[in-house]
Each structure stands twice: as structure tokens, then as C-alpha cells.
Image (cartoon, rainbow, N blue to C red; front, side, top):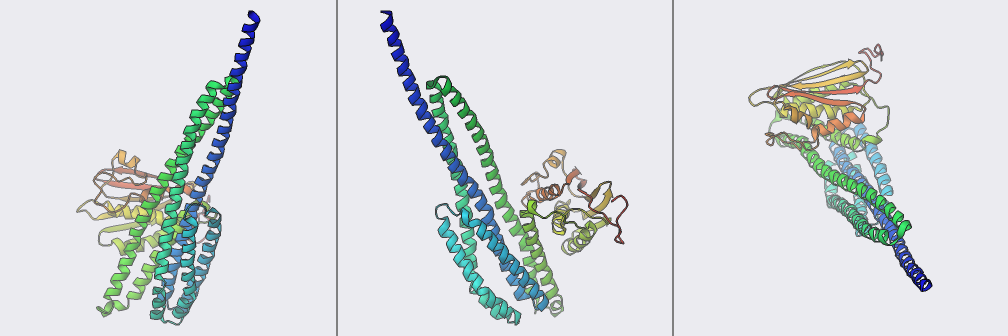
Amino acid sequence: MAIPRRRNRLGLLAWLLAIAAIFAGQGLVFLLGVHRADARARHLYDSSLASLELVSWIGRDVAHQRILVDDHIFEHDPAHMRAIEARLADRAADLAKAEAAYAPFVELPNEAETWQRAQESMGRFDAALPDVLALSRQDRDAEARARMAGVLADYAAVDGHIRELLHINRKGASDAVTEILAVQRSAEEVTLITALAGLLALLLLGLWGVRRIASYEARLLEDARLLEFRNRELDAFAGRIAHDLRNPLASMRLTLDLTGRHPADELRAPERLRRGLERIEAMIDDLLALSRLEATEEGQTCRPAAVAAKLEADFAERFSRDADLRTRVEEGEVPCSDGLLRQALWNLLENAVKYRREGVRAGVELQGRLVGAQYELSVSDNGVGMSAGEAVRAFTPYFRAPGTSAVGGLGLGLSIVKRIVEARGGQVSVASRPGEGSVFTVRLPRSAARTSDGRQAPGA
């Protein structure tokens, strides 16, 4: 009777092994399917992120084209007109490059149709451009504006299509994350069944799958958090810029309203309008440079003293009624563009005035000096100051200290300063005491510091 029992045990073992093999085979097939689904979803996720960046690039170029065309119509100097036309040509080439880069990523539902409509609207805008420029060159500004008015609907349509494309790709990225997480949850369940039924080989395979899944999930959760943060930052930053652009526009509108009512202001009106346009153009250039901060060409340098001189004039024009500014900036050079350094310092100066104490005239001081291998810039004020806890969080995006909700802004100014400075190998810090004021210090590496007569400074 022993032999039949042994045969029965062998038969049972064979059946168990067969069942285990079936489960193992099914589990392996399922895991391969999970891997393919995961790869497909990750491709969609990466494609959506790339599309978001490229569509934003296209939107910025189209908006810049519109501003340059308006500048051309307002301009009457032929040399300046030619310079604007050269910049329009550069912007058109940049836009063509962005469109070519975006084309391979158009694959989400409704994306191709929306992109085609956007291209049609941009085509009509481009077709009207030569006529507008020709009329502007002949100083037929009224006709040029009328011709532009005819394609404003197309420009508005492009803006709407760009927003729709951003929405499509954000949803595509979100859907991809949801799909990947769902696939990973299913894979965990099958891996558990396979581990229980597959003996040692299947157990090892199950453990491998668990490790892979845990790694995928951690990466996906981190990517999801990063995507959510970047979306919030993009929306908030766009609102801040729109608010900042209204200031020079409001000044220009007021100048136009006063022209004709007060003859004494007519001589100064063109200069005021020109300065307003220059401020808008500078903001747009700085935004383009900031959005591509990591791709900026190496070797760019600027002189903090020259930047400070321009800031002093702008500060006096904007805040002379509310604040006094003293500047003491030594000659030197730092590895940063004029526009980005100006943006960082202006944010600090503007904050010094915004957060002044009630009933006390703001006193602001901008200093710059060479300190060893670094160039140190500091902005000090006599404002409301911050507690130690608030100072620690001062450079965090969207942070607003308690009791400052009545002050305009989104809480992005200091985070932008930090990003600019650190991207150039520097550091920024703050020392502050409540009720006494704050001192913000920017330290950048020296870059061929020079004396006022143009000679290289000792030790540079």
C-alpha cells in the first residue's frame, strides 16, 4: 500500500506544481502587461509635461509678437522701427522652433484639433502683419491700428486655444498618474497571489515585483506632487505678472488722458509713454530669461553699479512720495544678466516700501561691495521687520507673514530672488527684527571685477 500512497503524493505534487506553473505563467503574463501599461502611461505623462512647457513657450512668443507690433505702431523713428522688425523676425523664428518641437507631442484627445485651430488663427495674424508694419512705416498709425483691430479676434482665439491646450495636457498628465497608480495597485494584488502560489521561484519573482512597484509608486507620488506644485506656481505667477503689467499700462493710459487737457504735459507725454513701453518690454524680457534660467548661456556678466543707477531712477519715479533711497555700490562684475539682477534687487526694494511702518517714511539703503571672492549686495530698510520664524520662511513661495494680508502681492517676490541668485551660484539671506526693519543680503561670486577706470581690480 506504500507504493500507491507514494504515487498519490507524487500525483498531488504534480497537480500542485501544474497549478503553481499556471498561476506563475498567468502572473508573469500579467506583470508583463503591467510593465507595458506602465511604460505607456509614463510616456503619456512625460509627453504631457513636455507639451505644457512647449505650449507655454508658444504662448509667450505670440504675446511678445503682439506687444512688438504695438511698439512699432507707436514708434516714428525709422531706425527704431527697423530694430523692432528685427526683433519680430527673431521672435517669429523662435516661435517656429517651438511649433516644430511641439508637433511630435500632439497625441491627446482633442489636442490635434485645438492645435490646428490655434495654427489657423496664428496664420491669419501673421498674414495681416506685413500690412500693419507697412502702414506703420508710413506713419499711417490710425490705419495700422484699424488693420490690427481686424485680427484681434484671431489673437484672442490664439490665447483661448493656448489655454485649452494647457488644460488638455494638464488633464493628460493627471490621467496618466491616475492610470499608473491604478496599474500599480492591480500589480500589487497579483504579485501577492503569485507569491503565495509560485513556490520559491514565484516568491522571488513576487519580491522583485514588489520592489519595482514600491519604487514606481514613490517616483509617481513625487512626480504628482511636483506637477501639482508647478501648476499652482504657474497660475499664481501668471496672476502676479498680469498685476505688475497693469502699473505701466495705467500710467500710459493716464498720460494719454491728460494729453490735450494740459498743454504743459504734452511735451513730456511721449517720453512717459516710451518709458512705460520700455518697462513692459523689460518685464517680458526678464520673464523669458527667468523661464529659461537653466538654459541661459554661460559667460553673461553685469555691473551692479550700473544696475543700481537705473534702479535709483526708477525708484525715485515710483516711490519718491513714500520713501528715500540711498545707494553705495562699488564697481565690480558678477555672473548674471542685467535684467535678472535688476529683477532680484527691484523685488527687494519694492518689498522695503510695501512693508514700511505706518506713519513712518520708508528709508531704504542699497549697498554693494567686494568681499573676498564674492560681491555682496544688501538692501536694508526701517520697515515692520519679521520674527525669527517668519524670516526662516521668507523665501518660501506664497508665504505671507501674519498681519500683511492688506499688502498687495502673492508672496512670490522673495522666492524669485532666491531662484535667480542660487541659479548664479550665489546665496541670499535675511536678518530682521520686528518693528525695526530688515536687511536682505545677496552674495554672488566675483566675475572679473573692475575699477571705475576699466582696469581689473587687484585680486580679481
